[in-house]
Length: 328
Image 1 (cartoon, one colour):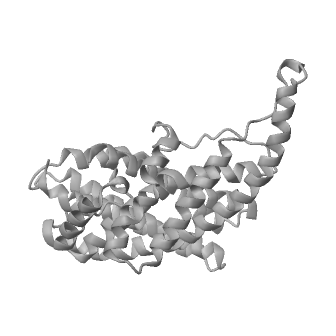
Image 2 (cartoon, rainbow, N blue to C red; image 1 turned 90 degrees about the horizontal axis):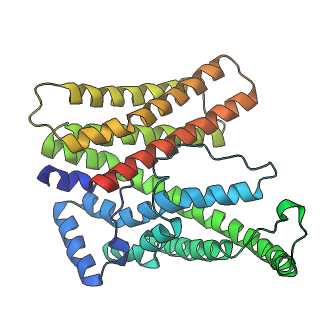
């Protein structure tokens, strides 16, 4: 393995440390010591990584399932091309990366962190909600044949369980937001210092450009979401964010094409090629929102454009995270 990857791996947004949640306490102590020997920023990112991995891999689809269940509109096929659609059974992933042990490293690094409590509550609520959801069986009438007595009993039980599931789902939605919002802020807050540390060690190499791009992508969607909530977003703000994202992407492409690079990192270059279609779609969604807004499009169109921006970012992140897990 290229030793230059040892530091960047700790900085990849949402990469997560697979298997870390189930590691033994002695191993946690050794890893924490190694992280702290590198830098406080590396230690902080490493401690949050298992929680970020759980949220990235499990929370998105769980919230989507709850949202579709409570929506009054007919459920449409999910055609979003997430990069992690071919991963194993979700419950297996959940058991591996969302165990209540996934806070161990953070507890040792920062015992007083509020994130420990939020993550513990989230894990418990996630398991309660998904366990109950797995027991709810849909009632049906196949080929016009009346349901059997057993099916009728199942329908009665499911009606009761469905009511309980709605309550558990609302609780899950709440604790998910309570964890995701501060987690995103804390994660993003660390990135500029980590980017500077990466540059001081290796210069603006392909790893620096990739992290710089993902930071710009994250900042864009965050600012747009905040601007939509407090009604402060403007077309010019969207344009500025899209321009920053374009510059970050152009910088990465220019570096990869540069013939005088010190050495070629094929794994990193392949990773960039994998996320490029999703990156281009995300930028196009930002430009569409900006242009439609300037053209005074109808509110529903702007709402659809905003939804497309957030979905395109989710797709980008899914490809990025999946490739990082597969490669490293």
